[in-house]
Amino acid sequence: MPDALLLEGKVAIVTGATRGIGRAIAEIFAAHGATLIINGTDASALDEAVAEIRDRHSAAVSAIAGDISIPSTASDLVRQAFSQEKRLDIFVNNAAVLIDALIGMVTDEAIERTLGVNLKGVLYGIQAAGRLMSRGGGGSIINLTSIVGRFGNAGQLAYASSKAGVIGATLSAAKELAPANVRVNAIAPGFIDTDMVRQLPPEKFEERMASIGMKRIGTPQDVANAALFLASDLSSYVTGQVLGVDGGMLI
Image 1 (cartoon, rainbow, N blue to C red):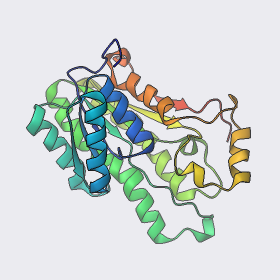
Image 2 (cartoon, helix red, strand yellow; image 1 turned 180 degrees about the horizontal axis):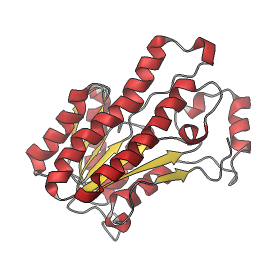
Image 3 (cartoon, one colour; image 1 turned 45 degrees about the horizontal axis):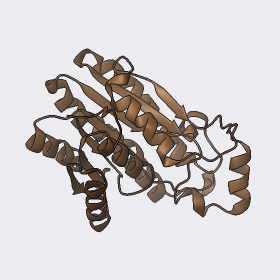
């Protein structure tokens, strides 16, 4: 347990929280005293995550299973926060999918799925969280974009488009919600050690590693630490920012 609980008394929602970056964010929020509502599409994985986080951090954790590309999922998450705690302080739009394909091979289905989860899901989350936070005196919305959304990457047309859209949504929402003391920021991770990255061919993995200035792969914890800063009062005067967590990666 950390000496200073940066999120004590705060209520947080984290989407895509059963593994990888989302799970690391949920863990660090719980360790810092937040009451958590987590989301994912796999109900059994959610149940397992809830039990483990409760056991590890003695935290108040509940879950709602659902596809974030469906508008009602974000609404259900925010409604549960209000029903249980009568407030919402933090909303992390983390859930995402990655479907790689060269431009001529990108299917309509891949475009719809990628934009649905990665961009529409973020928009729905901002709408639902922004409404409750505005009525409650403020809060922090944190959107996960990507270094690919900032600079593009061959073979990731749909993914890069969706993540670039997240940046635009972040900047616009930050301007609109600032008078209500709702801060909206984005985190742009680089090459992070997740299950998805470990599926790359060895030569592609080494190519990515060689492009990182700090010469190490990032960890989900590196991203979670940035999310903790943006969620806490340490960043109370920070909004409309895109924080790169990439170790000096060039792409």
